[in-house]
Amino acid sequence: MTDNWQWLETDAETAAQRLLGCELVHEMQGQTLRVRIVETEAYDQGDPASHSHHGRTARNDAMFLAAGHAYVYLIHGLHHCMNVVAGPEGFGCGVLIRAAEPLEGLAEMEQRRGRGGVEVTNGPGKLCQAMGIRLDLRGHDLTEAPLQLVRREPVAPSQIVTTTRVGITKNADAPRRFYLRGNPWVSRPWVK
Image (cartoon, rainbow, N blue to C red; front, top):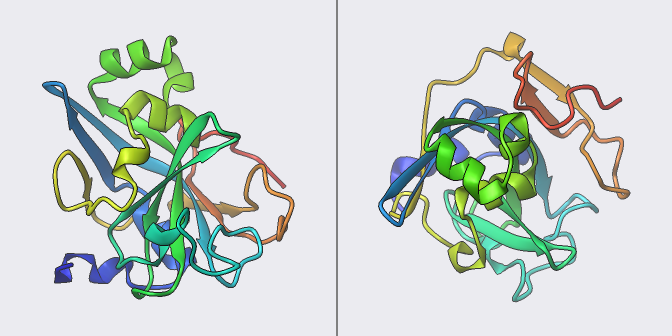
C-alpha cells in the first residue's frame, strides 16, 4: 500500500468522519457508477459490535489489512455490506459505508435496485446492490480498478451529525455513526 492512505491510518471514528464526502467509483460492464459517501459507522477490534472483536478469522481477514482496502461481507446470508479498512495494518478496524448519494450512473443503480429515489442507496445493503459490490471485492485495494475510493476535501465538523449506530445490540449506545447534516440520502437521520 502506498502513502495514499495515510489519512485513513487513524482511529475508526476519525476515519468514519473523514470518509464523509469522499466518493466510491465502480467501473463495471462499461458503466461508471459513482457515489458520494453521506453516512458511515465506525468499528474496530476493541468494539464488541465489530466483526474483528474476537480476532482475525477467514471471514474478517480483510479488516486487518492496511488502510484503504475493502472489507465486503454478507449479512443474514443475503445482503452485501462494505467497510473501508482504516487504522494500522494488523489492527481490525473498518468504516461501514451506510449510505451514499448517487453522482453518476443513477439509471443503472435504479435498475439494479428495482426502485428509484433515495431507496436506491440509503442503506448499506442497498448501496452494495446498486453499486454491484459483492464478495469478490473482499480485500480489494481501493486504489485499483474496478472499485476505487476517491479522496475529497474534509467536510466541516458543523456539517457532521454524530449519533448511535443502526441495527446492532452490542455497544449500541456508542456514538459511532456519522452523517451529513440535512442530506436526503441518509438512511435514518434521527436515531437517539
